[in-house]
Length: 90
Image (cartoon, rainbow, N blue to C red; front, side, top):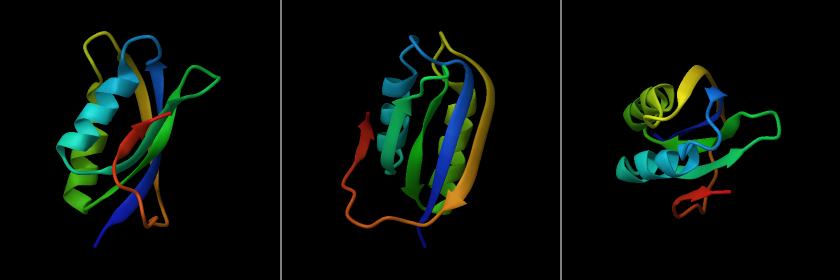
């Protein structure tokens, strides 16, 4: 059964290839959704897939690319969406 989360990543996460890292990680484990920069210096988005893939994805968000310094990752369950074909960078 698929699940979907919304997430926000705080810390040094803009200007360090965090969005491209997130797309790569999500695509490798078969998630759909998106990632975007927010005006407050955070990165946020949504991800959908099976429970184990979502857990793996959240772990990768906490790690981030080598140049990032992740301070906090918040995520919550939200309703699933139909019709997404991939994971996009906005």
